[in-house]
Length: 490
Ligand code: GLN
Image (tube, rainbow, N blue to C red):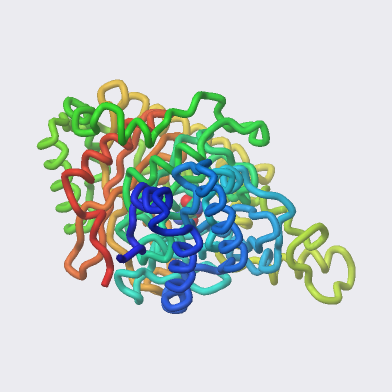
């Protein structure tokens, strides 16, 4: 049997029946990683010993009949979640040898449920990028075409899920980093509402935007991970203290998704179908709209007039927060330190010059500039005001509809190296995802077709705050009616 593309429920079932042990399943993935990771560069660190130990503990727990559906499930973790004792690099030279003394809340919850961590996945340095090319450890590659980017910043997680080098993975999304790579690799990615999932132990990029979420092969799998990851955490002051629905139980045993999608009102924002949208993407997304109509949803045009301001607003706010968050990497407390500093100033300067890559430096300079006195009002404060207008656009749209449907990205995966000389072209990759972070809303990317290469195409569903269950129901109904999510790279 090919274990590489089992659904989480199928894997849990095999484990519970003892047709398969967690150690066997883990070994299976470790062997696949050993043969296939060199070509994809999806993992930065593989934790063979830790994974086998966790798998053994899972088998013991299964034998005692104390398993959860995640017990013994092999996962890949983006390398910006702190994992106690296991190297966590954020794909930066700055943290190339950092072994965190504590565990992120999200990984702790998954481990407590019995999940097995196979290793830490490649990403853009400090999650700054849309292609995985800013990684200190070299680019990850797209399983659908090794000369193509897998998207970013969670490109390693996306590549690992698409290529069957894990059953599911964790990503983070500040401006699209779960959804855009999901679209580029033909998988499912969910960015929850800001505050739904704890940020404790996630290495911070832009704290008012960062959010962790599942990257999986199906909506059903995403629901299972979210159910375990989500919830209030006293260690994160921005985490929301609201009950966590049993997303997965509701999806699999509640009112059928096909019933729930009937009569849902889906808004199609005109601004997301403007010039610059690649023809195959437009076609596939229009086809998906027709599928939702066939399922009984009512699709209607809506307008989000501030859409065009997303990129400039984000590239003030995110670098501003990054410049502050990254001030801690000074060579004093942890991380890289330059050799033989002459004095403190020299140590700061050389440590940061050596430790950070070009894109991270660009963001630190941008952020420092927009926060500096004399420019603060013109840039940072103004961006905050526009952010409010963007959120107001969504609020107005959600007065008319239950969710929004858009393309996830304007085009399919581009070639490695294609956009390296032009940061603005690279930044435009996130034109459809960034507003969702600025407004703090949940967004789900689903595979909905292929272009001529063939490279995968993704559609995005956007929901009201804390309405992940609505997104999951709509996404699940779509996946029951289509088989895009079951296609695999050869
Ligand atoms: N690509 C965007 C950026 O470079 C978003 C990255 C992210 O979501 N972490 O900032």
